[in-house]
Image 1 (cartoon, rainbow, N blue to C red):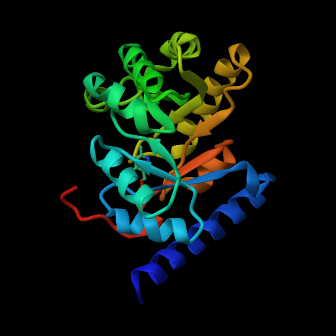
Image 2: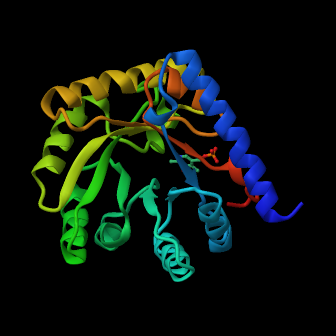
Length: 238
Ligand SMILES: *Cc1c(COP(=O)(O)O)cnc(C)c1O
């Protein structure tokens, strides 16, 4: 099989899972956006995905994300680029200048950088507040936690909503790897409801990956971020 056939098969499989998950949850398939996470894979894969109809792709590292976007643009494909990885504050401005959506704002320090980048690029940047879904008593998880504590999310959301060039779109979460994802996604849905009480337009819930997209759709995810199930297993070193 060619790489193109591989990717088409992966996409078809994920599409079928999404259709079934939406059916089971009594939701419209059109209510859930598939973001294909292409991190660690070459720009040539992103071009093939674009030719296969993918419109939303996710990356987790700067500057690789920006470079791949340029390559894919040069090949004639204007996609929506979602930045889903940990953000360093000194890189936030650069990412804000090329990303269409940033899923990983988890501290106030990032607001100014992203706002500055969006302003320089002369456009609006959509932002999700990343919520930590780890058990707060798990010290190991706390050490490498990404995401804001649920109680800190309303203030962060307000800071994003008030920032020049940023559009608050909702929340994002990653379920703990070694536990049932359902309680984590339920917690994220609760945080989302709290954010929407203040910001009715912030309707995005980005949750679910290759291993747990069904549970995420059942809990109301509007965006799933799927890598391996479309592109294959990544090399173990990355
Ligand atoms: C890599 C990544 C994904 C995709 O994970 P898969 O298991 O490959 O589907 C989703 N979200 C984030 C934040 C990621 O870093």
